[in-house]
Image (cartoon, rainbow, N blue to C red; front, side, top):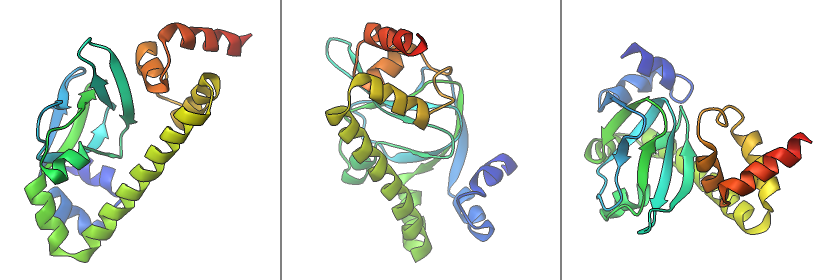
Length: 188
């Protein structure tokens, strides 16, 4: 439990950590496990203590489209599906052995309603997510693949060696062969 409290110290005032820790549990997921599956109506959210996750769409043909990457110190869920009580359109997959602090949506709503502090806390993370989503959309629409890759390296400097080139290419919206070409051109 102490590891969770330490991880939360950079996000929460000390007097609030115990309130947060009281509403969830720590669980471990193995690489390749899904926290949320497409078609599932999520009733939970998590704080990533260690590890790495991705939001991924998988087409009927089996093609993967990586929507987003979630590192330690961030929240994880299919948020719109959770709050609208509808099916998730994507999977939330562990890309590494990971530990998360998971909270039922019911417990989360109870905490939110207990004190206005928690709504402010939620807004901070929702705004962070919105900024990230808006930048990602703009980049996919306006930037070429090499620029998107350079931005990826800048945004996620330590992730490149933690995940496969196929996942990076999927995140960038390009084929793995194109990523190999870009990487080769950048080293020459």
